[in-house]
Image (cartoon, rainbow, N blue to C red; front, top):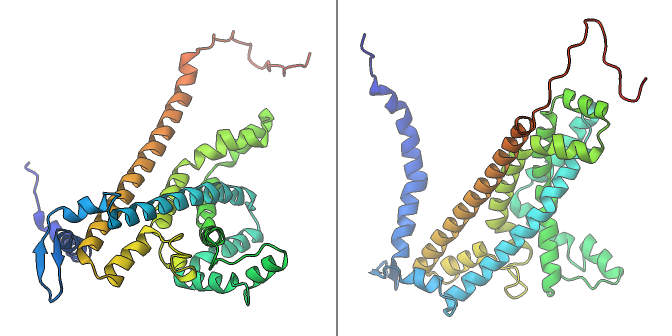
Length: 324
């Protein structure tokens, strides 16, 4: 009996293709078109080819120097954020209770920073860190630290980093807590019987079970930190000077401040490509590391076979070690 093939099901997917084309493909093609052209106003465009990309990747040009400097700040910021938020999120997740009413209270408290919009977070920390009316700035200055994120580059960086850690560490903690909750109690009971230490339990049981959620947490936090715009723009405006001017802020300055659509389009395409490449590298490395660890763990019993134990009569128990 021949199988009936019905192609009408594609009509159910057609709305999705239309939405994706309208919201992603068409704007992307527009940006690609702008990146190949130049304009002098009056909606007149002139073909420029790959000229903007060559200038963007040339450190000797003004555009290339600004882009590479902001890219270095972005990479440094993302590295610091991941180095702080991922271990801190794991520690918070391990410290949270596993049962009782306190679980709901902890989850609500952790979710509160995630519910605050980005521009509101920037405004909160802008006021919080002011040395004249802000609680943080007032206390630090009275302790003798001379804190001022508007005029001091180090203070501006510390403020932006602490603000991001306060805002997004909860996401890592919630993801890690979900991974810990999926571990069966039998694993902990076996470790308790074997007398395993807390570090051994974390290394052999908890960390492997959190591999997948940690992968998601690292990817999300890298993408968010690398594309950060609203919070540092509201707090520092990219200053003092250009010390906290990331690629996103530089892109807005070129596109809206200078109205150089060709340069901005080329910068946005390279920016997007860097994010995709780094995320792919993160995903590949972490996935392969987890696969290799699992393969090694499965291969250990086969690599060192143990001799078969002599059969014992039925009803005779094996004595415990150290017991006569």
